[in-house]
Length: 466
View 1 (cartoon, helix red, strand yellow):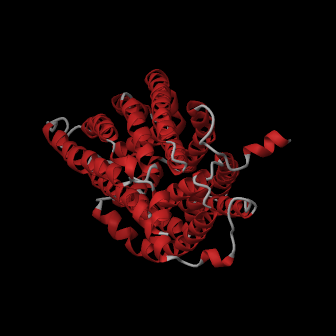
View 2 (spheres, one colour; view 1 turned 30 degrees about the vertical axis):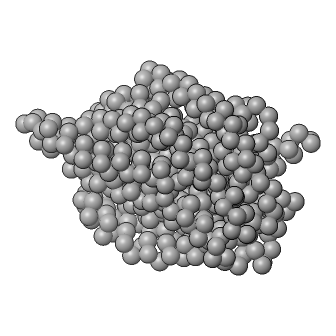
């Protein structure tokens, strides 16, 4: 029982073999990220099966708009995770407590903003995207429900980020698995039994995410041997709040830029018609699962680097970076092989339409080799963020997305126009993504080697200020 209990406690990543600590921390995060991805995937599978391919296209087309309006939470979550990891590594109980309290208050404020602004801008954004008339009403209803219920989503992301910063990736995993199971059950009840369609899957997601947020809050309230969670800590501190925003803003802007780029690409996709839109949804859902190891190792490297930078163990950070990046690349290589040989079975989970399965598989083969490049990008970016340098990964994302990916997509689509494909070939969009991923890995490696991130520790600057 003692060993089981230890799984659900804060963990010190500043001791022991780096590769072992990274893997131990990454595995629960990987399972959790897969479960998180299953939220939207379950929505897609159920509406695709019970409502039709157009409903599947509607859920997928809503994704870029949803991501664009949730960047505030991304920023707070990243900033919170970095500060919590560094203060935990530095054994600074006072600043750790105040950081957690400030993040809880900031999340409440940003949630209210999203609940008001989201429903007001949803339909205009979808119209701007040239969303087909056949699916725009479904898209609008789906998004409005998610925005009005964003409190659960936001708190789960922030609070689970705090738990990971403390080294506890297992608790967040268990809570996410519980809410994922609830989400799937409610999806089936609302859509298959009550015939609620697309709004039904949105409502199921909101309820499940609220449950996971409550579970995270209860867990944090029971971890007060590491920090204090009392009313006085919830009072906003200008210094701490600005530090959270300063650290998180680049990541939030990165997500915003990425989402805007996705919106531009989605607009391009919409010109190919409903079949290609549905194909894009399926590929992106499978892509989401394929990317999960990369995101998991990236997040693990952020916490690992944060705790060790806070503890002043820079040699250990560099050793862990080598270990973590090699492991992440190896896992991605295995995933690439699996997708190339067995990807068509995954496509059939979403639809029985042979033409849609064939088209989706063709697009996935284009992307497959990019996952190894993304393993390098995510791992090294995670280290830089954990050290407190969130600006460099932001600029790399801007270059690869805005300067390379979007223009290249439009250029390649234009160059592939023909009598058979008057609007261009949809494969061009996926080729542009592969090129961007590959160049991103090269640029990220160069930035890591340059070493600017080594001087960015937040815990040290706060001590100097004090």
